[in-house]
Length: 386
Image 1 (cartoon, rainbow, N blue to C red):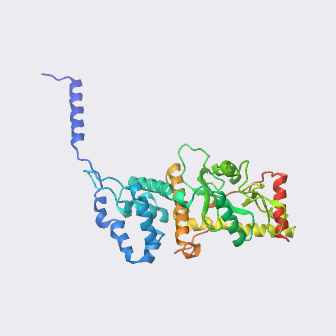
Image 2 (image 1 turned 135 degrees about the vertical axis):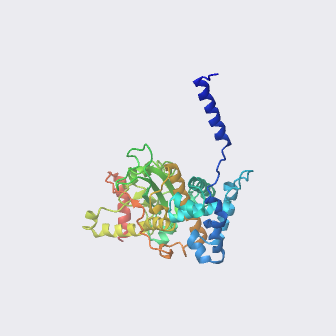
Image 3 (image 1 turned 45 degrees about the vertical axis):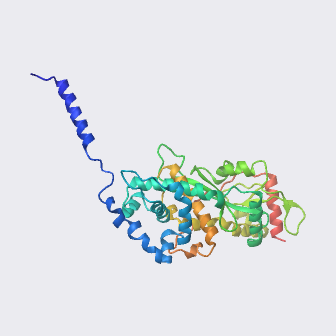
């Protein structure tokens, strides 16, 4: 009896589907099945327990702080054991994330070292970075209060001899992989794709506020005036009430200090253009004082990039994950700075020399300033030339 061609095709499709369903699914590659014997975490990391110096070099923090951080994150990054497989431990997940941040290696390189999947590394990095921010930010980078600004002003006045300054502000381009369908939005003037990390820094090299994710093509001034920080603390209000500079009587605004990438405002001081300063000793003295103090934010970025070398090469992931990575690194910076102080977080203390300008600054802006802004700067000029 002849069988129709339609029936033949139907039976073949059913047989193929059956064979596919019976085929064994491979959960883990053969190489990765040896993770607990030969993976970097199991083979190398545990040996660091008796070598504090090597532990610090590898993890970028002491054993005590690693354990403290791990304890904080356990409830948020743990996975349930199933009948099919045992999940990667919370400790190993944290180690994978820290090594990615510390080395800047690709997901594939980290995957080979730890004998896990490349996509697994990507998932771990995103999740752990998100939880680092969610866990540490409320304590180590909380929303600034009036007392925050008062303490910052005291530090800048006593340490850097710049009264009425409540913070140094700057924006840096963080190189990223070209985002899909982004056009030129993330393409910056240095001819690479980037997101911008805008930060205000206190006198102790810690981040007071950060704003991450603005398009790389935007200027510092434009980013600042569109930031959440600006809307909450600056627009239509003052950071702190005006007060006289030491030894004077006329009230002067409290200010942030920035470079030529920012427009001069009553709340934000920038240096005089070099052509003007070289012809006027008073302006030169003001520029020297401002630039010396503004090095706080430059050095903070340098310390950040030197410890977390993910900033030394393009971050190869989607924009949202890149933002999570940047925020986590900044929070870790504050966490370590608070816990360990300055002794081992200065740029000179790391194992290798890294250019302080690994993060690229913005172009100068020539936006017109108000008369009030010029008058405020002149008050500081007069004070620094007494």
